[in-house]
Amino acid sequence: MPKIKIAPSILSADLSKVNQEIKEVEKYADLIHVDIMDGIFVPPTTVDADFVKTIKTKVPLDVHLMVHEPSNSYIKGFIDAGACSITIHEEACKNPSEQLDFIKKNKTKAAVSIKPNTSLDKIKKYLDIVDMVLIMTVEPGWAGQKFIASTMPKVKELRNLKPNLDIEVDGGINPITARIAYDEGANVFVAGTSIFGKKDRIEAIKEIMNGLK
Image (cartoon, rainbow, N blue to C red):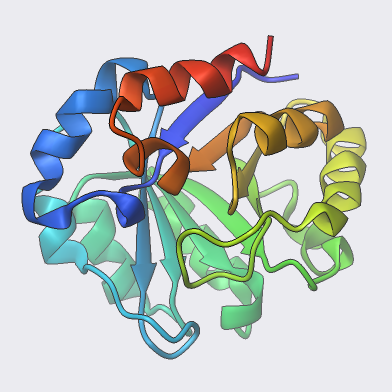
């Protein structure tokens, strides 16, 4: 099993003081998760590449594109803004391998994500290309949703198929659900509300980590 990584999601942070918010957690974070929503693939809209450019941190930026058919130039904007890894959605792209190849050619880690009701079979052909798979544990779009436990067999199957792959889970992650996902094979945990929704963010991260020991 690869190293456990905690990825606080700025979707639940105060974006008007994002660098201050990140500074508070960065010593305890392995990644900073940045959700990008276009209002087409998912109803809400969030920040863009120009906003990502303003983020100041040494922690790798894990950019999650919940975006319909992101073009090469659109993706390049996030690479130039400092993304360390970029995740695209299988459901949002006609031919995900094109976007994944472009990301890899630009010396950036590439990941593919699937929604709770999408079968793992849809992405099996990309497993030798990607650096990570993101299994959504809620319907993408809104922060603070309840963890969907029925997504866990996909995590287990994926871990059996790819023992060394980074498997990320995102949605409803807290100390209890992180442990459930970890036991099935997840090693990268995106947490928004359960970190930035708490007064003591460091204690919140420690609670998640302690639950994985």
